[in-house]
Image 1 (cartoon, one colour):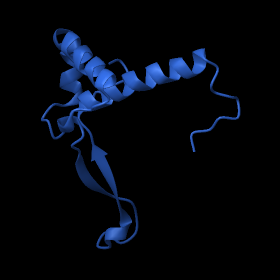
Image 2: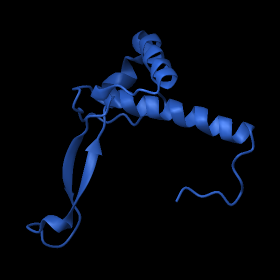
Image 3: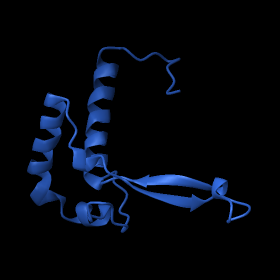
Image 4: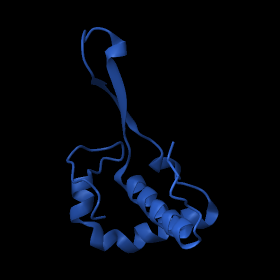
Length: 106
């Protein structure tokens, strides 16, 4: 939760990361249950997959659609579950020495 950027923009679920970050203690157990259930079943909740896609202007002629890039505003809950999964997977890979010094993400 500490790594969540406190932006005020609302996602498709209507919850801003700033709001979530300021009220996370009462919902921590529920979010933990959802995350663990997702990991156990291998099913990610459909509502957490829905993103708000916005075109962001890059440069040059703003009338040319090719000068825009899409960004996806994902629900804050899905970002938290994604981070939990990353932390678990990274710890597993490090503990079992499955990453090498020449390992790259691309």
